[in-house]
Amino acid sequence: MSSQLTKAQSDRLKNLAACTSISVAVILCLLKIFGAFVTDSLAVLSSMVDSLSDIFASLITLIAVRYSAKPASATHRYGYGKAEALSSLTQAAFIAGSGLFVIYDGFNRFVSPRQIADTGIGLIIMVISILATLALITFQRHVAKITKSQAILADSAHYVVDLLTNGSIILSLIVVQFFDFLWFDTLTAVLIAAYLLFNAYDLAKQAIAQLLDKELDENIRSEVIKCAKSFDFIQGIHDFRSRDLGGTYLFEFHLELDGNLSLYQAHHYCNMVEEKILSKYPDAQIIVHQDPAGIKEERLDNKITHNKKKGK
Ligand SMILES: [Zn+2]
Image (cartoon, rainbow, N blue to C red; front, side):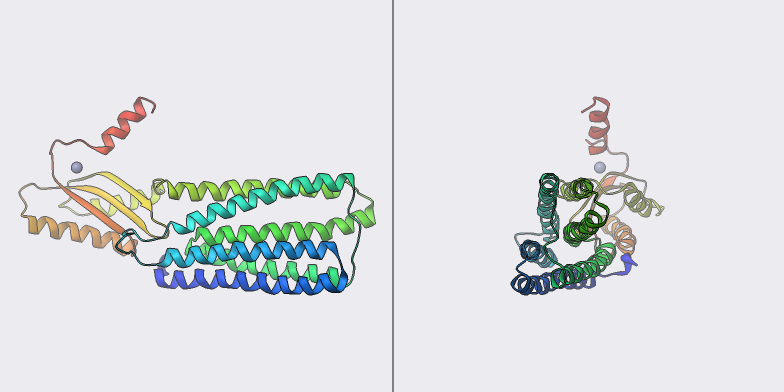
């Protein structure tokens, strides 16, 4: 289904997901301000501070999603798609920071175990917060999957932090209360922190790959090359390279054609190749260089193989 989504549809959906997460964070924050007043609970208060940082993080996501949807301009002729990777990188830093804090907090609680300060309203607010966050994450994951948006995926990873930390507060309150299992709290903290750090690493890796123009997956590469080679008049293709501009792909390659063709004919043939590729990747940008077949020239492919042999 993802390939049938147009860029406009995908942009709208990403915008909706970012607005939803801000709304949820604002509502939860208000609820917790109310809860903190009524119960005078420190746990609810610190959870409120957490919701405040959620609003901030989701605002970054919204700005990135809007910015990356802007069409190409005179100063940014490839568009603004990579803004999403930047926001994803910021979120990864947030999540890694939370991971370290969770470890710190977990060991602190080993020294002075958590007391059950609030039942009733405090607990109800925590449960509402967990359920709302769970619904939000489900929606975000769905949007991230069909739009392949890094920013939305990172935003959702950020809410997983809340879900896990809040969930573990309730769980460990119960476990410690009923089973007298004091270090359970610290154990969950270490597990959660490990998960968060791994997640942050994964998000950062994806974002950095895009920012550094990592070559696209081998199956995308070979599909595009196959498109070009499917025509009889194409005698060869080389120096193929590709990158992700943030939601849209850029393909660049040399096509080897009969050197006696007229420029008109060669142009027409290249258009046919481009159209075939665009039928598979509708928003892609394609740059074709035409070579008379058999010409001697310096090639990127050769340089890369050469460097590989030399172990560079
Ligand atoms: Zn060439």
